[in-house]
Length: 264
Length: 188
Image (cartoon, rainbow over the protein chains, first blue to last red):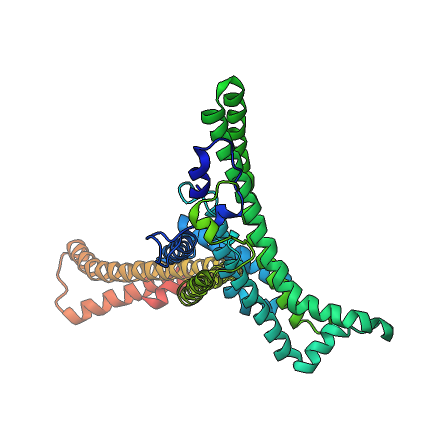
């Protein structure tokens, strides 16, 4: 819950949550470093590490329940993302892609975990990091595979097009690959989480306001609808959060696959 | 946002501005997580995947091998059965021929035995007969002489003469007897 909104709740009207909802002061007071989103990222990463490690304890051909879940998640990224999007050479990038998927899914899902209730990925820094890493990786792969000149030539001058078009196409392709891709990766994820969280907060705080502040039959009825609506939205958010983690991972894989391919 | 909280007024939040602290934390957390999972977790998953594949493939292979072995064993048993049957047939034929042989042999033996017994019996009869004849000859002489002495009233003093007389008489008897039983008489 946002302290900023709660702070004004005692006032005259309802103040709808805005970008300030996503700004947390340092946990241990002014001047300290750690904020709630950072804590979520740290604890979330530790949780993934611990759960995955437990899943591999006493690993056997016939899996235990934990092993089965861990294996299925890993196998999903391995088979449905890496091998499907890249093909056989994709095996090399499974560790990166799987980690991206686990990391993002966890940080996204944090948005609907009770008591945590904040998607760390709605803070642009975290998606940006992964988007930049993904882009560095696929560009590096492309340059390694085709050579510096070959890679940019493939990218900017795809064959089979009349030459005047290149005047327009080459800069577009360049900007699209080098700048737009990391940007869209970042913004798509960040603002899906941002908007989802905003809507949830709006429904919950609005419902709360209607019931306790506005009150009366109308206020309580409308507030109850809003709170119930927030439950449905929470389920929907969970779906969006997993989907966005999948989309981010899949696009990263597709970019890697494209860089590895012989022709763009 | 007409009622600004103090720290909000100081720091206008923009969702587009990445916070340096978060970037640092994010990079460290992600890199550490990546290194840990890559070293400790993913190889284990890959290993179990490989093991599972191997187990399934191995199972199929084993089943195929077992089937081939079973087929081979069946063939072997069939061959053995056929061989046994052939041998049984051969043994039966052999036994049949042997039976005929044995029966023939037994018959021959029985015949020989019968012959032998017959001959032995004949020989015994002949010898007994000869013995009886000798005894009879001895006694008959004495009896005849005693009878003759009684009839003549006097004893023949000369033993030698007396014997000669009896011999002569018996020779006459034997001649007649030889003509009656030719083969057995010769043996005795």
